[in-house]
Image (cartoon, rainbow, N blue to C red):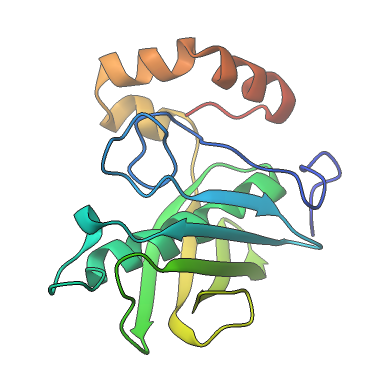
Length: 177
């Protein structure tokens, strides 16, 4: 179930950390993925494939597409007001995604069982109803903030925790990076 204090449908979720390759604005070559809360426990997101995201000439690298799916699926946790990490990501590459294409992603939580969060996503070329290019199913595992403190680099954790936007989010969602 969607948490009562989750962002409203249509609300832009923003980056969870400025240096995140998936959603952070401080990563020059990152995806700069923009996610919005949807109805229920769903979100939509999009990013435009740039030349620095290519693998084969003129086509998005499969790892970049998997990252876009992972980032989109991970953003669902904002709607549950929980901290979770990717436990499994199964990705299907249906068709090539050319450089310059905007990939429209849609994701939803399909089940929650204890600390396990199951979700699914699709990525469509050019429009929200365009042809499916990628899809994924994922399992996220709920963790405590200590997971990041114990395994991350102290200077980045401190920078994230001192970021005014993160402080605002921590008060609103009781979640730190």
